[in-house]
Image 1 (tube, rainbow, N blue to C red):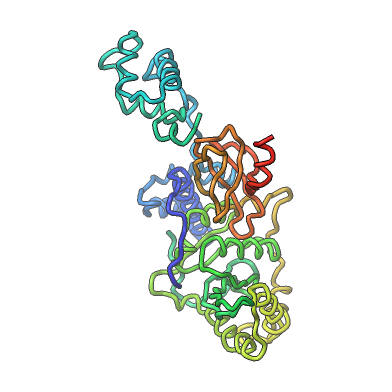
Image 2: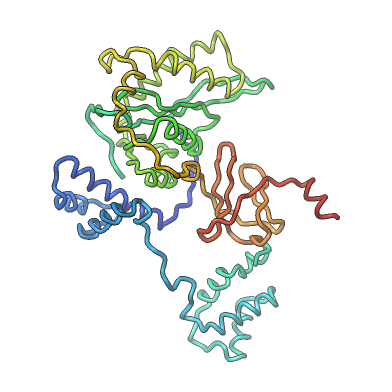
Length: 415
């Protein structure tokens, strides 16, 4: 695979929860392989999870927390005294914030000298870094004011799972370059998900880039049409090693597995599928060219359903992938009632709201609530079609963002 971009900033609390989830999955897998629960815990305690070792009793606590509350129970609960500042007198803190609002041009040193003069602070009872953090939490630091504010290894032997949806393999290959109607050229990349048991292509789609958001879109469509899987097997490309993908898999109860370095041959089944695509489907484009990405995908999906899924497979004792999936799909997990799958797959980015209550997202300008000006917000959004853009502040849903319409705003502003 070629390099692709992925979010660089990762939440430490989320990393910790994912490490605990991986340890719990390791215990469950060991028990399935015949070990006793105690032996599985001791084995898990011998491995490092996100670079740290934990005792068997600690991992056992995680196991029961996950059993009772699933992935959400593995997160650390916030401190009960969060937001309370016992190191600074509340009266002094309130005076600090009030003076900063009245005189935003004053430096922190000037603010401290005024508080000392009033007797609200005493020498040696505070630090400048602590006071600066309080200003940042209130959105009154200089920068905010200028903005306008208030490891799991893959298998090394030949394997085959007995039932459908126990394991999906995924990879990406370079697709054809198509000539667009305006004369420009468009490179394409094919993300595909293959069921290990039946060889059924649960979903595959050409995209303009090899990026995380496009793989998530492919996985979302596969889950909605084919049900939930138990394990997802991928290589070590950037699109497959992001924290967001691990979080999506954890929330759906999916075990994410990566191949060992230099062990690409362990994904031979999907490589064979790509070979069929290259030798059977792509040559048809020479005689009937396509000129848009949508047209390419429609042609490809027709080939999958009418040709690939209906062709007898040597590895399936002469059965077709469609027949095998139908016969061995009795164990397929379905989504629980009321689960908002779309929300689970939304990407997340942090943005600072401008003075005009807008943010930049996907090369477009989006409007948010005016009371968020100058503050850092978290945006949950569908990165492919931007059908849904949610605004969150301090883990609380605020509302939906909308594309900015400058012409319409001019009519409202100049009345």
